[in-house]
Length: 208
Image (cartoon, rainbow, N blue to C red; front, side, top):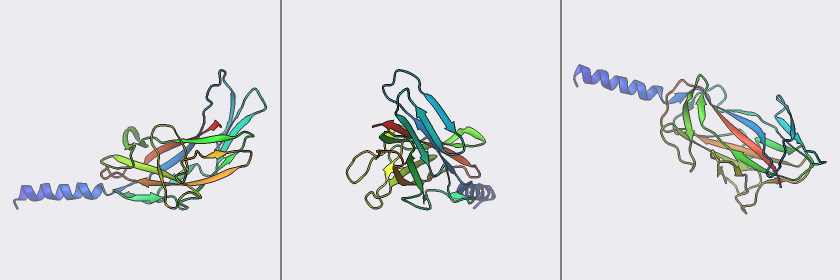
């Protein structure tokens, strides 16, 4: 091998090695309330530290949900690797959703691209099929009590959270009703290392 080819080969090996790790990603669970068919704007109060949002309508019906977790640090402070699957510490009961209102609600979920915290224009695209690729990652949720190891893909389109076992939507019927779920993430097959990525998940409650 010539000296020039050896240099080029060494650079390629170094580049691939650098791509094998990335700063720990963060999944932040946001709260959003979506009201369908309401012709006027409700009053919304939010406590930024509690992970709880409440919407009070001009009636006696109050819609509100809270989350037991608002952040998932994948691998803690460690780096994550290429083409690797990660699950929350408790695969089915990592996060608890609580109905803080007094009306029956159906839960919806939506994901987003993971962005580099230093430059959000640099991102991993959230795939829509559960497949990963170059700078493409996948995300799923699993509801506690559902079919064992059954996961549903999270996409960038708002979708009803459903039970795999029967296809029924996830409802919280009354005040203090709870349900738990976990997350699973598959990293891209290729990405640039040394970047802390952050992605947001939006959980929404709609009057059932």
